[in-house]
Each structure stands twice: as C-alpha cells, then as structure tokens.
Amino acid sequence: MAEQWIPAKLALEIVKDERSLIDRLRTDLLTTRARMIKSKFETLECKPVGPAFWEIDPYSKFKADWDRGDFTNCVDGELDVDVYGLDIELSGILDMVPFEQRGLVLRSISVAGNPDWISARDAYARCFDSRAPNNAGRWLIDQASLGFLIARAVQAERAPRVPDAKPTWIEREWDVPAWFWDKCRSRNASASWSDGKFLVQGVDAFGQSDMVLRGVHFHRRTLDAALMSEAKPVVEHGASIDNDNNRGRRPTYDWHTACSSIWGMLLRSELIPEVQADVEKALITLLAKGDKEPSVSTVRPYAKIIFQEYSKA
Image 1 (cartoon, rainbow, N blue to C red):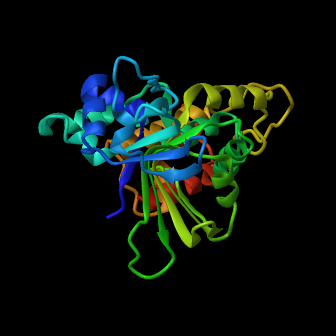
Image 2: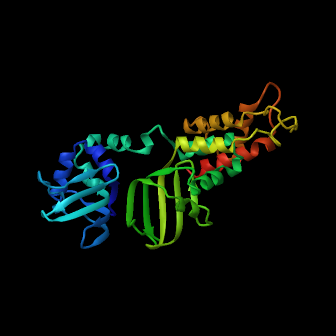
Image 3: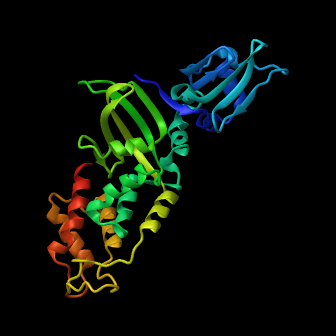
C-alpha cells in the first residue's frame, strides 16, 4: 500500500501541539518526505528527513515555517541544513489522534468540510446559469487549465497502467495543477462530475500511468470570479414556448433553478430516473406555467446532461 502524504501545515493543524510533533519526528516515529534538502555539501530531492535534523538545543539555529513546510537547523552542531516542502505520512499523524475522532479530524481539515470550497457536482450545476448545458464541463476544465479556477482533490493517486496495479503514490488534499486539466481534454480521460472523480492517462516521469482524483472541489471565489467574467445578457435561443428570441427579452424559463431542483430531487431520492425521458418529464413539470409548458425538445438538452451525469454514479 502506498503511503499517503499530507503537508506539514495540515499535520500541525491535526495534532495542535508543535512540541509533540517534533518529539515524534526526533524519535523517528513519523515518516517524512521533503521536496528538497540542502546543505553546503549536497542538495537532495524527494528524500526523507533524518531524526538528527529535529534535535533542538538552546543554541541551535532551528527555524520552522509550518505554513510552507520549510525548516532550518544546525545538525550535529556544525552543519546548517535547510528543508523545503516537508510532507508527513498521514497514518503516523492519525496515530496521535483518538480513533473515534479521526473521521471528524480528517473532515475538519478537508475541502469536503470547508465552506470556501464547492464540490465538482455543485460547480457543474451552477454553470447551468450562464453556460450552455452541453458545454458546462468543458468550460470548467478550460478555466481550470488556464489557472483561473483553483481545484483541490480530497485524494489523488497514481498507478501503473497494468492490470490490477496498486497505487504507487497517494496524497490527501492535493492541489490540482493546471497540467492535469490539460490532460482531461484527452480522449482517454474521464470525468464524473456527480461524485468529483476524474481520471487521466498519459506518459510522465513515472512512465505510463493512470492518475485518479477523488472528491474534487473548486475554490468558491475563483468560480464566482470566472462566472462573473463570462456573464453576458441571457438570450434564450430555442428555450421559449413562444419561440420568440428577441434580444433583451426576459428569459422564459429559469433553467438554473429548475436544474438545481432536479439535482436536489435526485440527491433526496425523490426522483429515480430509469431513462432520460423521466428527467424530461420532471423538468416540464417544474417549468410549467398555468396551461403552458415547455416542449420535450426544449428541455431535452438539459435533461440529457443531467441524466448522463446521474448514470455515472
């Protein structure tokens, strides 16, 4: 089983006791990994930090920046060593937490429990307000690949592309880089917006591999900014029962509210569609005004994308 890593900042947030954390590091009870270890003799990348580094005396030059994961100390009283980008194995940190509290602790430090982040499912649903339904996923991926939309995955893992391969790398609360979204445009990539699961295939420094993200969330403020920058006067082409597309006319239907209501019904199991037509009927019912209602062809583009995403769950 591959190790699961978390940044030093998250480790301290979980333990809430710097002295206890350093004591465990000094006694080699925690497995570590640094992006870079630098001294006057050598520079190492992606290597563990030995317990000797964490020996601290009143005259040492020990400095800690837990937010960045950067540390400085004088090892053996004579060698200045800098550590950059420290990660700590998650299992060792959880051993310092009472068993019954571990689930709550993990959620408290996760994007899944942070109101500043919005799930991939909800971000997709919001795009119905200002993006064509058939382009919502593509638009989100485009914005993320440009760096305008910030994403984080509850868990990321990489495995060799061979049958029954086990992950060789797993990381929690992983900040998704722009290159991942570039790969999402590939024909071999897959996206399940309903549960925030994304898979890409390719050749990288680790060879041929599959990379899977689970529990993807987007930073709410970056999504708001992206939607605002793309906002345009809404003109409902082909979405009016009157077939009147005069520019500037008030939209005939509130698609954002209707589609959000459908997702709510799905989540509460009030609607369990077996075919796309079930979603179309539900949308027509929601959008009906007196004796007027949208045609099947009008609601079909919206029902299609909702049913496709629902069927992936």
